[in-house]
Length: 175
Image 1: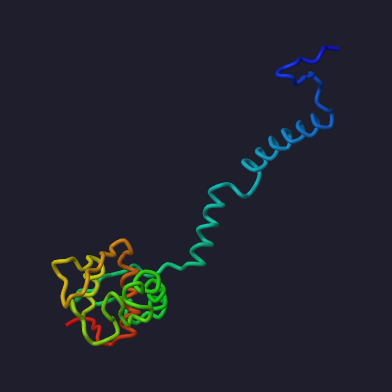
Image 2: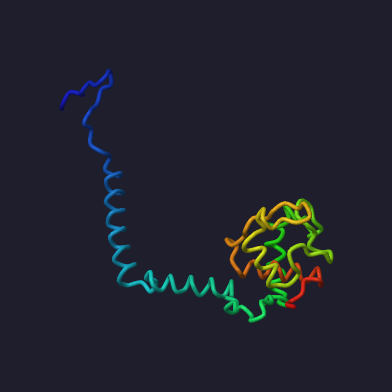
């Protein structure tokens, strides 16, 4: 039998690993090889099928809306869509309410439920104001500017406008 080797005051012996540990280790290797063979060549769940199933489940849970088509007069295509109005309310409360108030009554930004529209009251004008923002050159009535919200995308902006239109009939489709 070899003498234990001493390193930094710690004695190291070259003892063999327990046989039960070697058996478990060998068993896991055999199992993993068998599992790989089964999964890739004999199971009915290859990666492509799994992806297709996940896509189908996602589409069933989140049905796609019809493609957003801009109208010729610039009016909001989601104006009377109840689902879009509900989504728009959520977007409004998450993004817009900090400046325009929880119920659009106005805070730092102007009220969106009264009859006064500082920068136009048509869907086309309001959409442009939200997407492009109100810079210093367009400020009126000592009201501050508004950042551009292009990052939200047209669908969320139109849904938010549909919610605002449901609260305020003075936001008109077009002139």
